[in-house]
Length: 134
Image 1 (cartoon, rainbow, N blue to C red):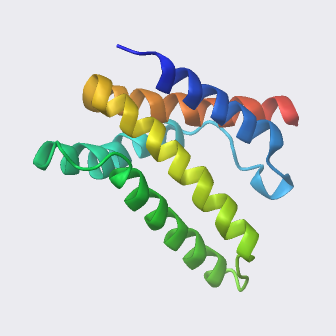
Image 2 (image 1 turned 90 degrees about the vertical axis):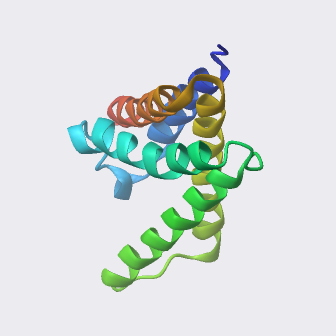
């Protein structure tokens, strides 16, 4: 087992929390955000696809994960009467794709529990970094 995806997920989350802006201050610990959400997302985005077709190309689950998150973010902005700027879209796409790659690497190394662990560690890092920044 390689600890690389877990350490990278923790560091990435911490950096995101430390550098997020005032609009991102909702990074409080919640059971939904820090545990239930990662479990659901990892079963949907990594578990099912890689159990059904274990030889999917590397990065394929991360790409679907990123696109789905971008579409969700765009819907949320639209409901709020705003639009994401092009650079916000690009940054968010890179952010979620990188996270998805880390969770996929953890899945391929340690199965679904590894993916859930990496995602949970990442979200905990965001929460911690956000608290330190404030």
